[in-house]
Amino acid sequence: MSEAAVPPIQLLQPKRFAPTLHLALLPNPPYPTITMATTAKAGTAKTSANGAAPKGKAAQPTRAEEPNIGLARADMDDTCGLLNELLANYQVLAVKTKNYHWTVVGLQFNDLHKFFEKMYGFLSEEADQVAERVRALGGRPLGSMAAFVERASLKEETREGLRALEMVQTLLVDEEALIRQLRDMIGRIGDELGDDGTADFVTGLMEEREKNAWMLRALAQG
Ligand SMILES: [Fe+2]
Image (cartoon, rainbow, N blue to C red; front, side, top):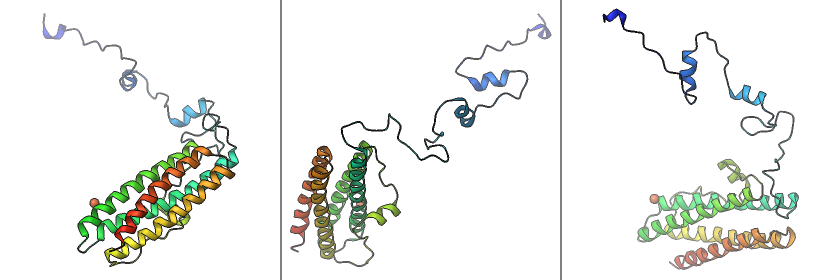
């Protein structure tokens, strides 16, 4: 058989999971373009591709998003507001603690450098739990540094050149303010808003903070 007589190579049928190849082999472009916009148009979804409500309508939780756990929506909103204020304070205190971890100097450097790192880790973990508690109640946790600073009652550290003892004393003052906030929340969320689960959760946080305050108090003795 001469070279010219070799039959042309037959392209195999494209597989279903290879749409790009399939389209490339079709003879007459252009082909219909499938985008998020055309998909949304064809579907019956009432929200846009990013989950937001259509323009002109307020975002309403869908049935799947709305917790049906025996608590009124308004009460859960109040609880989420309190949790967001707590989250803001956790975030401000965590950043302050990390700052001290980086900048502490002096004879106690080694101990305090490690202690501040550990404290930062616990604060970050607890902040995460607070934010997820907000989600469990169908709310939206604060999610920006600007929002944290605006909602927090604790103040960011703006001073420089602090001595190690001043750092410990500052954290103790903040920690005790956080404990008072947590104690106030337990009563309001449990007694007034009827959410025993969140009250119990907040009680656990308060116990952790009380333990840390004891350590700070001990360190503050010099
Ligand atoms: Fe570090």
